[in-house]
Length: 78
Image (cartoon, one colour):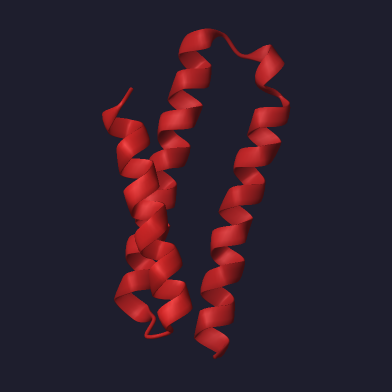
């Protein structure tokens, strides 16, 4: 349970970082914004793979699979 809570906290920390980066997006040019978005997608995929590797909780695994699917689609469609 502690491991799952730590994993969730780690994933949320990454999400908060992306939100903070998005708030300062007005200072970035289009290429930099695209790079930030691509980096965020890749980080989300890596965290989701980590969750699948260490969690047996069905809800966490389902969420991780959704994150992988959604972020791979976003990368592929760029």
